[in-house]
Image (cartoon, rainbow, N blue to C red):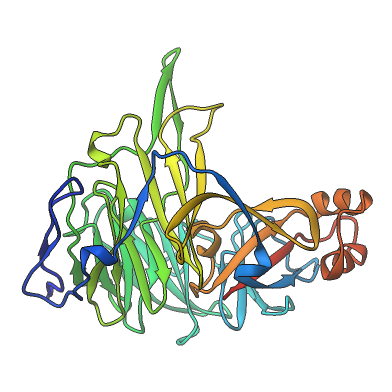
Length: 383
């Protein structure tokens, strides 16, 4: 049975206020909402990464049996998970980088995955959920097959799917396969057990497409509709201007409004929600136009004490002159909104070290790395 968790009607930014009616919504006064003007011009402000996070460096151990060529896809309180998409390996490391286990069920059998579209890990049940095509295959961390979860016909195009609680997965479906874009599905059989009914308007195209000599050329940038935040998630439908907080008890409340009205923008600028620390909110905006064969991004930060917004310039002590950015992308691979990940290429670090730009623990790791060793990751424990 499907339950309707949220009922609300919304009039958009431009002069009419929110109306939350008759359901489980948490009331949030309009004056308490965060506001971002995505088309304004902002001055740059430099801060130190150490101001907003405690820094932990991590380098996964090099092992001929644990080969991978991409950053970790999942980081939890106890484990780090990587995928070797080339051969289908799923690799499990400890939080200090030691190899623990790996498995590979690539194949076309009923208990296999032909490819890995999405990987979700439930640390509580110690289960992997491998979305592949129109199903989710569930395995133990050692690769033992447990069950298959059947999805709606057409679910190949699910944009995002995350671990919600012990019983459900939360997904975003941009192709109207499910009853509403945000749905909760059972971890047991894939049935829809609830929906999150966020208002929506005419669909916004966040891809830039251009035809050149009868060939379609498409540009895309990261889009985050589901972002971990405190004890729940920030939910965004790019057709409207409001970001909502969806709590663990399934209450919904507006937390951020962007302007100008996205339905009237040309080119469109969409906002990828935010990451929050004690004193700042960090966001990214994407402009849907071709600029040097990519969609231009802007990284902004709001000082919560002064309510002023700046362009980010974030540096850190152990790498002279290196600038990093913070946004929902920073926490996309962690299971905790207070834990971020930044990837530093070992080749880049070795060059910087030869120019005496490194110091502290980072220099020590680079000095002791093999020439072709693994990249180094910064784990950010946000304050």
